[in-house]
Image 1 (cartoon, rainbow, N blue to C red):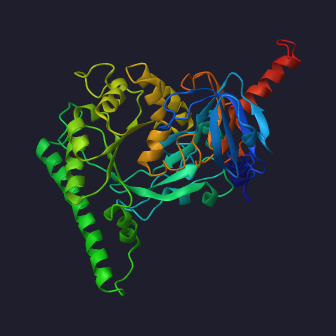
Image 2: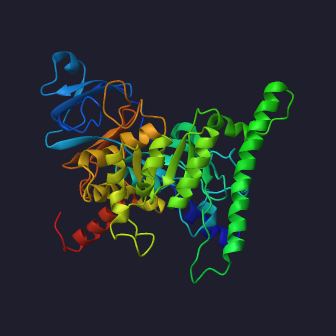
Image 3: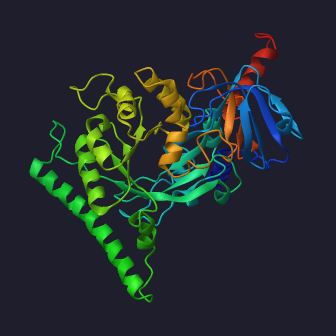
Length: 438
């Protein structure tokens, strides 16, 4: 081992989380006296003094007031007086576990080399020992929709739980749908652009044709394989079939009005299930979103308006417009992975600009769960669903109200992280110096 390599070894090891994944739930638990934010059809608003019993990782019963004796039998009680019980947040699109340090190439597994690689699923590249997983959990993020980036078809999204020993443990849904990065719909006319409008238009048309040709080729391969089983396997086209058959959505990264209009028209012509990822111009495309039954994952509520003629609060009010129009939507942080813990802050900003608090909480829990196909087990607190939730003080959208205890599939997880350990370390430093007490 060279001197340089020896110096690098402890650096790489220290970048891994030392936290131990939680063991399976071993006894029945009952949380009572909590304000339960169920986010369900039966309980669209919070339940005061509610209770929830869960065992073997599933919610078996819940209610309001004093739990009946049948629910109390053989259960360990957790008194949550003054606390809120909240479904785990779902962050998407997410790069947690795909990227550790952006400046260190060896920790960046977000992209493949090819321009089109639908066979690449995000879950297989996840680092289950990422130090950013505990950071996300500290912000209430208990599941993510991991999305690779780069190229026209970067790969397939995966739904991940934020606790486990291996990538297989983390992967809840390995194939959640294919991602398509939609090209700009019109030439850019700005002082910094050095290419003319005609040249840009040619590039745009070429990219759009390449996307269409790729989907045509995938359909042709499927038809050939159905007619002749000896047709050679092409893993790229195999990965496309659930989207072409309507079993999975196609996640279309589109932000501008032109991108959304052209991509939604394309998806409708092909009979696909579109989910717009980005959607800053979604409020301008509501009739088209309604006609195409499209869903929207809004990314980065905390950003500036895209151009000078837009209102300063444009990005803050899109969610309210979608809610009023009945368009299914979710709110995602999509920032550096270390900042995805701020997803509740993004939802709270939308709530401060017209969206109801109930709808804002729905947009980071049940909303994304239903869009990505796991609404039958995640995103709400109701019987039969996964026991995936956390306890916090007060309003879960207040940034100061961080989770105090959390469970994923009934397993109570460690809410420690590097920042908390460093905080404790340096408090001890000043305690030893007599600068602070306790």
